[in-house]
Length: 198
Image 1: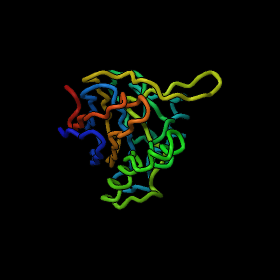
Image 2: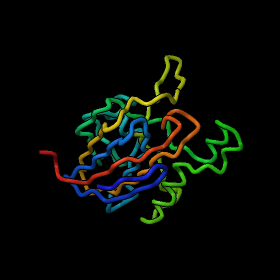
Image 3: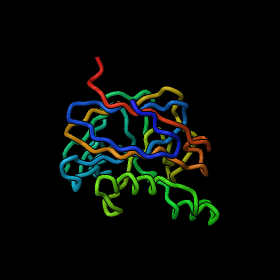
Image 4: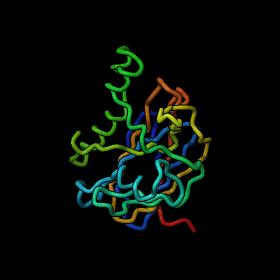
């Protein structure tokens, strides 16, 4: 069990068949997430393959995270929230500036976390792809407009994923303070790697 502080990054390898549990400790905290084949990081999470395979843009129990090779990396086996985002992307200095003004340029962002944590595993900016945002609420209106609104989570809500192959996971415990994805107050989350629940 690892408590990932507010705004911090985490990474770890999850062996095939083991479970990764993300727990939103305080509620309303977005967790940005990338996953790679642990033995060949050129094989990594693919949003297009995942959305095509499940024919939907939100993730929940039963969703399979597909790779760029259209092979399964992880499967959501338990979800006490019900819907997670695949299209909102990771916050960055650039997107913060565009959305919220130049005064936000110096604010820490998920892309910074991914770059720093990925570097520990030999990954660079070229290895960053569209990510998953666990717990983040990004509704899509009929006209295609996206929103980032108050989250659906609550304290203690979990997402459990089973590794279908040995995977490397990168997490950014989102530091965003300019929109409601973290309730304007980022908080800690818990990450546990373990056997299948009894």
